[in-house]
Image (cartoon, rainbow, N blue to C red):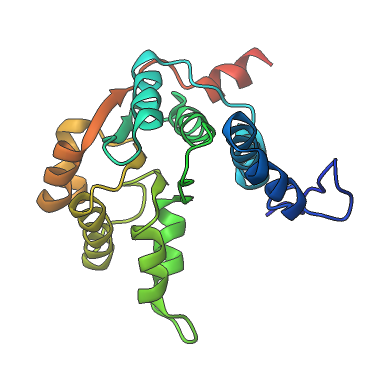
Length: 222
């Protein structure tokens, strides 16, 4: 994680959570408060997004439509499943969608988290000194979760059960999730199991990205 940025208006205070800026925004209210909340989310995205994707912008119309639905009412927005072959820009669009979704200055703010599926499994794997259940609860209850590369980890009964518990909780509690996967829609049941695939089918708006591997094209052009 990057070092916390300093508030440009109040040296010595962190940009994210500057108590003076917050107090001023709360006192003024209205547009000032909305702009303050939006600036805080932009600052957090800059801090937590991988450097390669900090400037990502939504350029797919269906993903842009999902963002607008979320910004109107985060509580009723569907989840978003972005699939397609490697290198078609799924992670780029997912992170761009998350930034656009949470920087509208919503009140109350949306608590969001981002991870890859393999990283999440590594984090949740039982080991000494770690409360895996408490950790699982933090991810499955997030107001908005970005889960990148679902289906990329080697399948096992444990991986399937963890995935089911995560997705089922978010499905049951209507918590929006942005998911990317290389797995074609028709093969989701084979890779993720019937229970997970069934819930994803009901809870998600689906967008398929096609085209060549942009990383390979860039390498060949260099």
